[in-house]
Image (spheres, rainbow, N blue to C red):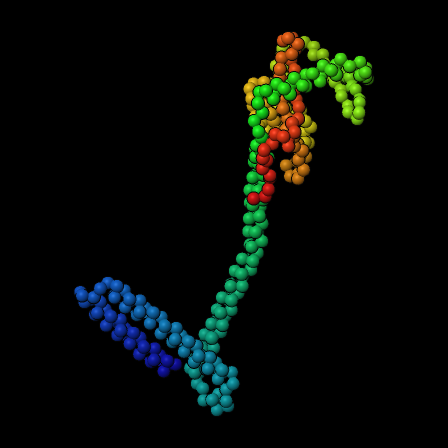
Amino acid sequence: MEETRSELDSMLLELFGEAESTRHLSSDKDMASDVRERNRMSVQRYYYRQIVRLENRCRQILQGKRTASIHPTADSGEQLSTAQRLHLAYAELVMLCEDLGREKEELLRVLADNITTEKRPCRIFLLQRRRTAAINAILEERQQHPAIKIRTVTAGEFHETAQSAYQHIMDFRQRIETFTSDVTAFGSRDRYHYEKERLQFSLKKTLLHHSFDDASEKMWRLVNDGEALAQIYPAKLRTVFHPVQTLDSNNLIYFQTIQLDTRSDYRNKCLLLYTRVSAMNGDGCLMLFRSLDPCKYVLHEGKISEP
């Protein structure tokens, strides 16, 4: 230990000597500031290297004394004084403290690794949940505003469709081969006709305490409001009417989607034409709800896919 202490003192003196010489050099007015900084860093690195080397040397000496104390000889055991025994006990205690310190550091490292490992599934779960929420938000937005493009339906086509439907309705009303169940439900009476696997039927309803103009206007206002129109369907069905073209106040086209819930993979889609025309020389009104052939009118429809 005396040799180690003297060696440490000599190295510190050398270190202080080098620091003193560096200080003298740095005091020179012609030395640049970057040179002074490099010298300071060099001295600091050298200082810490020497400290680490001396600590290692001290640890080796203590380990040697500890080994010698574990296997003492008969002569050496008799010759040891009380001070030497205390010195050996102190050296052993220092080595034990170092071993316990290293064990503590290792335990802390293992604990930090375990905490990191335990937190990893939680972070993965949170990331997956945020990603799922973002995907659901995108899908919901695409369902509310689908990317569909149809060719423009002209006023002539609206008029032609309405005229054809009106003629078909008049032909049906003038038939004498129709049948009825003679049951009045909520003020409605039915007529139907079945021919060549095609069923045609009508309901005739009398609205009490409502004028014709008032009833037709209220019904058309309902048709123009897609959200109100969707409420006619059962609540368990998610029905949305997307307006895709409005020619004027009496002609519009909806893209209707129906699905069981927001996560359902199946959606029923159709393109619906809604038009209102005056009939019977102004004494009547025809409201036509007719589906359009998507192959004829749809130019492009965006698909809902996971981003």
